[in-house]
Length: 201
Image (cartoon, rainbow, N blue to C red):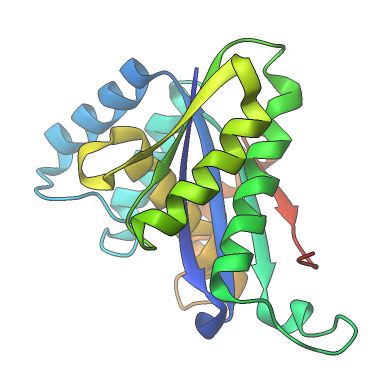
């Protein structure tokens, strides 16, 4: 199995979410191909660009295919309640969310070799390479951590939609209520699970 990772938002937007989606590469490709075939989407699949109905369809395909995800969520106001009230840097928060989301998966892999694919678009490649090395150290001999251009990764694009969905809900966007209705059955079945990050060490 592969864990595909992407984030949404940032401290300046009020919250950052990070999704770690577990799918086989073949299943991710099938979901993506079916979605594009039905919707006619061209270009990169981004949660911030698709309609509510398109989002619902993609998430239904994900759920039907047996996809699962851990999503780590951090809210700026909750982080500011820590002693001293100082907020972490955007990069420190990103790293903590990634470690949390992937870390929730590792005990569940049962020692099965797992690859972790991280979107390379948010930060400088040298910075992301350091984060990749940290994840690789956690995987040890059980898997491989790599960076990927989201435009060329079906799984990372699916992870983007899930991260963006939880971002919308967390900040209470105008679309939050309808997105929440879409996610209800997946949250109830634990196909998508959420962990709250309230402190960055």
